[in-house]
Length: 116
Length: 115
Image 1 (tube, rainbow over the protein chains, first blue to last red):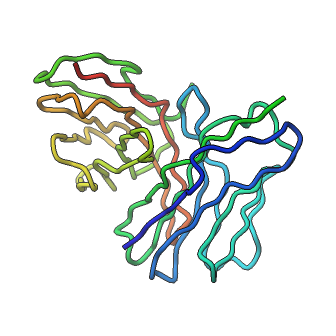
Image 2 (cartoon, helix red, strand yellow):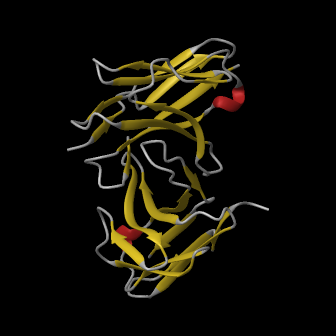
């Protein structure tokens, strides 16, 4: 069975500091993709970053990077130089190619608060 | 204009009423999805469609039905609304091109309250 776990219901970070949001996953499928989405208070879901299971390097997109540790089945999101606008819910998600039934599953989310 | 739109954005209804949530997209994607979001549970898949003639149940399809009227339109219906269907509903699309990198693009969401 596929599963995504986000153990941090809420996180605080000081503006301009870096923060790591944890995500662990479980799948027996060797081919899978990992995603992070941001949900601001306005409610929309915004795609941030993608990591494929066969990718050799960690994905980066601007201030976002994904710390992919395959053996530990973790895919933590690192936000560098936090900004007040980063305050939001963050969801980790996974899509397993062969066993996932063409579905993307989501974690419960982590709410990030950026302090001025 | 937004690529994925949902109407209505907010809806209050009563138990037993039938309601329809609509989703339209201009991205030209074949795949469309309906999710619901509840606090502490993340997003859960209700139904998905890979093209106009292909409709599939997700993990929580009971009490819901869908219609894929065209490539660009995917509607979700609650046949007889009940209070535990109060949630935030998202429509999403994706441009699947093989492999695991299927990024989904979400609409703005519909907040539904069933009294």
